[in-house]
Length: 365
Image (cartoon, rainbow, N blue to C red; front, top):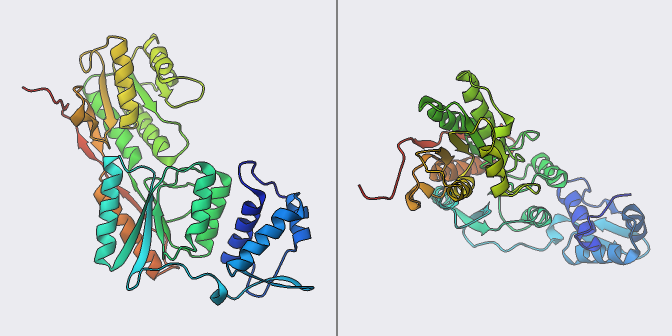
């Protein structure tokens, strides 16, 4: 018996599972599709949702139903024709937020590179819940696009299984900004281990021995690699990494204020912090201000600065900036290469961040 997630209608889940099996070649053209009764038993539901799922698939041209014989996978030519832009080949790029300067640069680079190769780009700016991201990815193959580049916002087992099926079915996609260690897929990322290393090493070279590290949850390659670089820099400098000087913001168990207060109350009170991103740095600056610490007089901060935080705050920080435009172009190049050669070797591209080690302040001289 297969379990249906509680936050999705049963017929939607069953329909999507069958559609994926058909599109991935697990159910070939002409193959018999499980009956309403068999599906109801498999998913432990009544026959109403299984009937609705098969009816929808029939209307969309995935299934042909024959009274007395059952349901069978329809020829590909019977499926609903996706909307295509006449005269253009179409790619898609999906980003979590529009407001971020970095993501806008990624999209600009992607769109310009794609246009140079005579591809039109569909751009999606959406912050997905886990289930919504799964729905989006499951439906994207039938949208008329030839491939997609996207930020992977959730790494649930079901989404990773879907991406594995994409890979095995040779559906072109490129991961942007992060990768999945368990999947050998195309991706373009910043060399985040190098980012964490160089930011921390700059603080070490400025004389800091006790350096805190603040990050968002360590549930993706970006945060994990930046933390690994931070630890490597301390090791090379023969400084001990102290777990108590590490804090995770946006964590269910501890507020940002509690994280910063805890670290600053430690007997090895840090004189500097390395932050995994500018959102974390902004919260740190706010909490340190509330504790009456001067920046950079008392505490020096180094951070990845995708939103140009250093330009809009009066607080000087040491900054690394991801090369968004170059990342967008590289993502488009690899995706187009995958479209043209579905069985070519996997491509991994890691880009160096731009470093700015002179503190930046908006205050007049």
